[in-house]
Image (tube, rainbow, N blue to C red; front, side):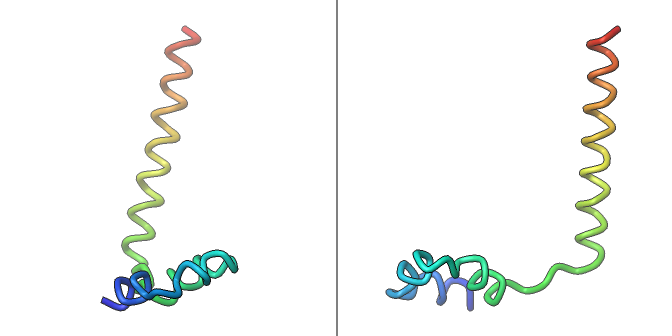
Length: 60
């Protein structure tokens, strides 16, 4: 709800122009849990392994 309120504010465009959007989003969104970060990291590792396997297949 806080994010919607912040982004729908009539002055949000001015704050975006000032380069404050990352801070606005950081303040409005809840922090990620350690489990969510670990899951995302595992998925990224899986993508890298898949990319490496694809390169090996293309080379072969």
